[in-house]
Image (cartoon, rainbow, N blue to C red):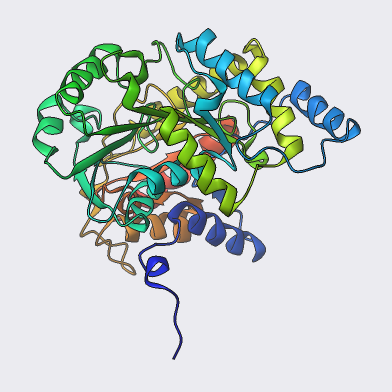
Length: 397
C-alpha cells in the first residue's frame, strides 16, 4: 500500500484552519456560529492599496517577477525598516515570499540541518514546531505561564541552550498570547545570544504595528547580534491584506541568498499585482493602520472586561496582536451531564457545539491548559460570543 512521504507525516493539520472549517460546516447547517478562531483582521484592505492593485493590472504587471521580488518592493521594505525601525538593510538582504509563513519556511529550511535544535518559547504559533520538524530539526520548547504574561526569562533561555542549538524562534507581539517583549527584556536576551555565536535568531514581527501603549522593539536593534537576526514580516495583519499573500525575510546576506535559491526552485516570485499593492502599503504614513489598531484596542478591553466576569478563566493583558489566551484548566473534569471536559480540546469543542462560538485549543500552541480567542470581530459579535461562552461554561459542574 502506498503512503505519503515521512516528511508529510511529520506535519499536523493547522488547528486554526480546522476550527474555521468546522465553523463553516455548522453555519451551512443553519446554525448561527461566531468564529473567533482564525487570526485575520475583519477590516477591508484600505482603498489606497486596492487602487494600487488595480493600477498594477492596468500597468500590465502580469509577468513573472524576479524571484526575491520586484526592485521597487525591496526598496520600499528597506525604506520601511530604516524609517520605522532604524535598521539598515540592502535590497539584496530581503526576499519577498508568498506570505510570512512561506518566508519562515524558507528560512528554517536553509538554516536548520537534521538534528539541529531550535528553541521555541511556548505558547507558540501553531506552525512553528511543524516547520522545524519538517526541516528535520528538534524543537526545544520553553514553557511559560499566564502569571508571567506568557514570556520566558533570561534564565530559561540560557538553560535551554546546548551545543546543538542552531536557532531561536519567537514572535513579539505574540500569536497566540498578545504578549510583547520590551526593549529591556530583549536586551537581556541579546546579551545571552552574544555569548553563543552559533545561534540564528528568527524574529517573527508580523504583528509589529498592532501594539498598545508601548514601543515596538526588535532583536535586530542590538548590534552585537544583528548579523544573526532574521526578521519575518509582511502585510497581512497590519494592512488587512491576508489574501494578498505577501511576506518577507530580512537578514544576513548569506541567508537571503539561500532563501532566494530555494524559492527559485519551489515557487519563483510571488504574485505580481499583490507586490505592487504592497509597495503602496509599505510607503504609506500609517494612518490607516493606526485607525485599525485603535479599534483593536477597544475590542481587547471589551473582551477582557467580559472575561473577568467568567469564573474559572485566568487572563493576562495582551499588549499587542488581536488575541486573548485564557487559562481554562479549572473546567477540566467538569461536565454538563452529556459531555465531560478532559482537556482544552474538549472545552473548545464544547464551546463550539453548545455555545456556537469557534475558538482554538491551546494544545495546538503548546499550552494545553488554555485556548485562543481572536477579537478581530465587531463589538456586537464579541458581546454575543462572550455571553454565549459564559452561559455555556456556567452549565459545567
